[in-house]
Picture 1 (tube, rainbow, N blue to C red):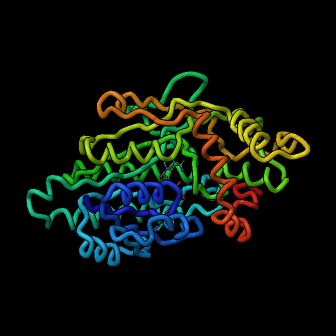
Picture 2: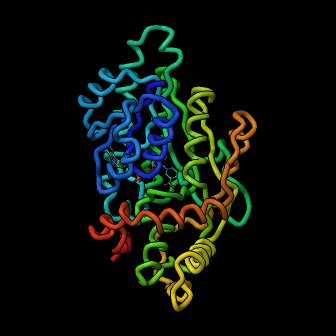
Picture 3: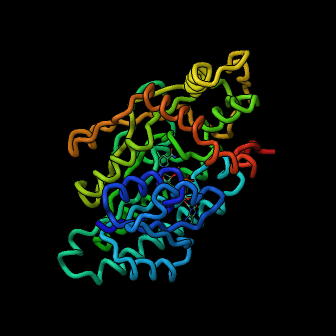
Length: 348
Ligand code: NAD
């Protein structure tokens, strides 16, 4: 298999690239290397004969077309995106450019390439557009997001992803491009940029800084270990039905405060300090428009494609905390550069 991965220097894309290279697939990572993309996340596969990297902005249609023509992919995994909700509040234009216009370019480059393929390769070709559960909006105390839940995005990030999902769906219905869409819940695991909740809490705790909890800490997310998401993406691309959407989620609902407490407990066990890490917890102003609860019904993925999450929240969190403790060489330079240190997305 020849897999072109957009956004493959980011958190999830690099996990997918490391996995596929390990499986023997030929991989081309296409990434602009924004503040969120780091070649250090690809270091474990950088020297592999079946791995290649091209620094390309997906908004550059011509360069994207050249990459398709030169690499000749069998599958495209589209993960390149601006992905941080807090950032989207202050820098919405970048989210519209990459998530909407960039996705349009990826679809158009895929279509031009696919239309020219010989029949057999044309039939096997797939584009997997990787999206989020945030497009469905916010749940009350009950209920789960299903694939037929109406879209109701609330942040510039989720609105731009929702628009991208609609483009992907339109390219299937209008042009017959074999696109699939996955909508996944919150991921966590190694190589996640320290601007997102779990690595922020781990690193702030290690550095003795306050552990910021937005609002009352009661917002609920459905947490999935990143390698389980990667397994799901591979399964959807290989066995999913073109034109369909697949929800991906770990059935691991936790409030943000529960997540922060778990990180503190693990650090108390593995990086003991004189006082309990939870004493650093500090409640701060809530995120504007903060969705209250997300929860995924992954029945379609489980029953039709046989997917199961391999990690529980407990095992995944243990692995994650240990990884950050063992890999300061990855996150140290990012911290020094100020990534995730300053809060973003507060309205004046
Ligand atoms: P990330 O921010 O860690 O990585 C995004 C990558 O895209 C970076 O390497 C960045 O350099 C690259 N990129 C950004 N703009 C680009 C452009 N114009 N051209 C080329 N490359 C560009 O994001 P992530 O957490 O790995 O998320 C990957 C995808 O999965 C995103 O589409 C996101 O919406 C989706 N997703 C993420 C989560 C999550 O919890 N992190 C959950 C569900 C879905």
